[in-house]
Length: 89
Image (cartoon, rainbow, N blue to C red; front, side, top):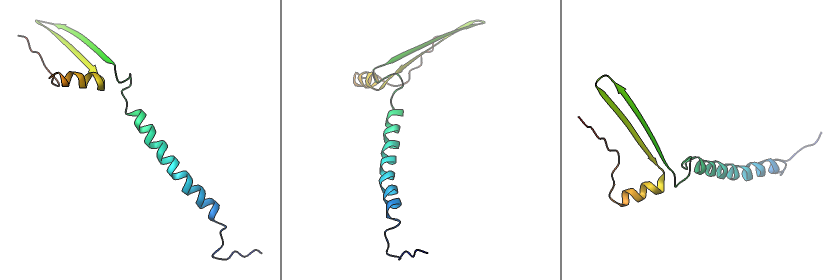
């Protein structure tokens, strides 16, 4: 039977691994979050969507512009505003 004294360093390697692994895991989670937060098609993309609905006595046009971060900042810097709606009767 082997006796280990309370002041022995037998548990030190596993504690060292935990202490070394936690900061690495934390950094990986933070970096993965940074990548996931980016615009899916890039920071310079502008995506357009248009839908025309015709029914009865009216026609509706839905036009959406999805601008990534950099084009959005350029438009806002030129005095552009957010969401606009055009109602024609």
